[in-house]
Length: 524
Image (cartoon, rainbow, N blue to C red; front, top):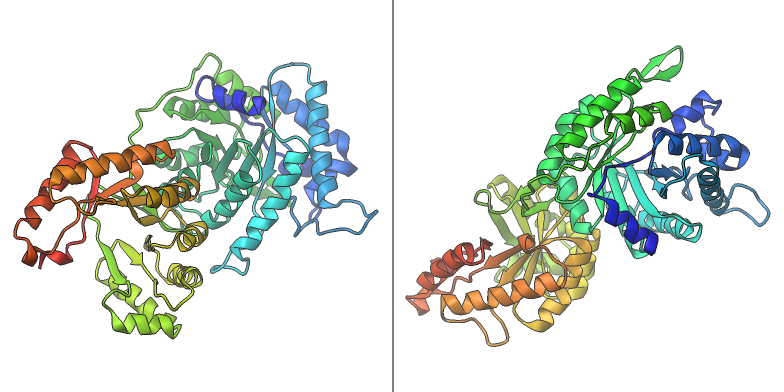
């Protein structure tokens, strides 16, 4: 635990450096096509130790254990006595890393990362791997990493936010180690499964990673515009580990053209923009890391002016609350809708999906999803409806339920950073919802009522808002992830209701400097 705290304390006080490529260098040293690099932990131990040592002596603060592809798909369970089991591979990886540290001529504080790469399979609904199975695959490796001495967990080369989420949850639920996550974007500024930098940042920050960023796929020059967009939204430390340029094939070999000196200068520019952790990926060598370290000599971390954005996201994009008017479609809610109630009872998912598509066509930016009926299994139905909606619609979803078990099931399996509907000033409700939002991320709709009901005055509602805000911060939530509902009451029964609501909205902005949301159907 002491080592973990020291690492987190150093971030932002000094620039820190990762190592460079592993697989590309092993290919140069004889790794054959189809041969798993992780097996070299056992069969070519000295080669792995020497490479780790070379990176340390080049100036790396972090070395990645050779575990990038170590999972049950590549290393299934072995019978007693068989070699190259998953545990043997991971154990050997950390033994080699520690041996390299012991042999390093430059003695300094350094850290060994458990390196977690993609499983190689797409998750449902785009592929056939279930989210919970992906979680279990990562859980196995995380537990082994903890057992054999990892100092941190690096989740890298992720092209799918959903797989990244499974890995992050596995890391955080099965260790107390710092968790870093880096994604692989194309030149179109999107992940393979479609996410923008803003969507990736929203989800990863919501899950509570300690640092996030980019790696692989592109060289440092091609990463600059993607980095610019990521820095616009990120409020936590940013990592960049590029390739040594774009790969090309020559004589059956993969080649990279960016020299150590050119690499280092591009990376220095990134440090000047506010990147705090820098390193390399495919094609980079100890010479690239040494040049990077030299180019950044004497630099201190640049602390950016950070503006917290209130973001909800789907698997593809983020929607900012407060920048412009956001419309939330609320047709997928059984209250007062006999046809939707019947569809839920009959498992008529097609009708529900059509409701979603109609709202998308009408210009909704988010979709509210409420499936609460007393006679159905709400957690199961919520999971099914949410998953099916995300397979055909890329709008972010608002998870709408009064049942904490349904809320947790939905937040755990949602691909993105959801909107959460809702919390209020009742202590019991805040105690149920805020811990879930802290764990899984989300933007919370805060209804301005409490155990005493709905205040008749705007100031009374603002006092509840202040109470909710205070409790949210105590649970570790960012105030920017609260959106306050001033409550619009039926005007036909109280002619002053609209004025109280409008005054509440003014006070939310002027006193709390907060964001607001309003259901306007009661205006009529």
